[in-house]
Image (cartoon, rainbow, N blue to C red):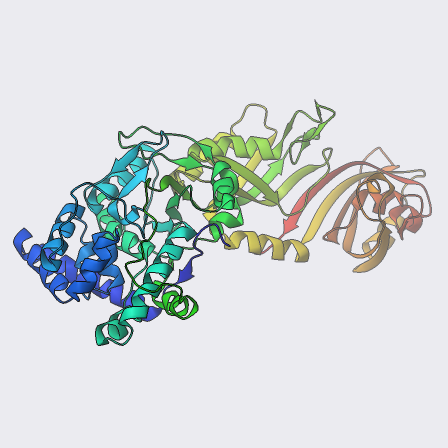
Length: 554
């Protein structure tokens, strides 16, 4: 059985109804005083079957669960300023029910809609209204210094809640399915626990954060409720979180886990994820016929859910082109037997200068191909993409220029960047597509075993779109599959070096993935033809520079 209630998209009709109700509540709140709001609540309660309200209260169901399960029309119970005590007193007054007076956790929602939870010190926290909870969350977001232009609210609740609800609904069906109110309300208007909570705190969050909730929001606020009575799998998943607590005086704390942010665990909860009990309850009612009467007690709840708060931003991407001026700098960090190869890496120089400006947790560096550590990257530069994880700031154009100037102004002049900009996640796709189709230009310093002749220069320049066959080079056979690859040399041009008849510069344009060093010296016959075989002499490559990487998308 799943360890948490899996989210499902609420139907368009339900979503429209919720939004419509939200507009009605806002209208009431703006134009009516507190007395009018309470009157609306009383009217909503009066429309419910009083005997059923009394039955639900008697088995420990909280007032918000009573109203949502019975499909209260205008959902006034979601008003952010209505405290639980007022809801309870009105329900008891109308139903003629007198509670024992002591606070009791809801036997269905486990206290979630009573705004009660257990903090990291296992202390029970109770809040009066949804607005109080929204204030707590907003305070945490601001304390962490996130720059946001919108947000998505996600709620995860234990599977146990659905089990409790199904048991309750089964008993209600057994004795009430023939009644008209049951057919009209129970099978079409019941709202899930997580929908009610989201509906109640989203509007005040928008006000407090001064941004709108949006399905396309990159900034996500996630509330994860777990309970000790839930399955062991649920406990194991949440024990894996790394915690960073921020004191707010309310027991609510933030949890960071990069693995959660980047893995499927997080992607399982999309922006509009909700569980529509409307759809699922009807199936449950058909499956469970085990209760003889509603008054068969549901297990009492002695402790609330444990609440973990997580706010994070989906990855942001910065793309650009880098230049590598040194023959002793690798593209990525290169460590062999705890010893660094080269004096630095392109990845570290760029990443270490961008990450602090974005105030992110970590970064990943991706490039369109790579050059060897002893090969310079000049000319137009090589396209790259830097993925920033959980960035608190999205760099502005001014900040981007500042980052470029900082990297290009480093004293050692090992690496430079150009055309730096923020892109969407589509930048990753564009780079991968362009990488397969790109052409690359090189300049190689070549030595041959005899003096260069005019005929050599002429014959090389006439070779256009020449096909070559390359077996996996000997130098990389230990890490690459032994394959045979067909590549294209689009054009070549020889530039003489005055006073050095056996040395020349070879300018060439090739298909992506061509091994240039092996094309020059032949790799003991594993590349055919090669510069050595074309000129009929021994050829060696002394130095190599990449001068252009043609990718229209970058």
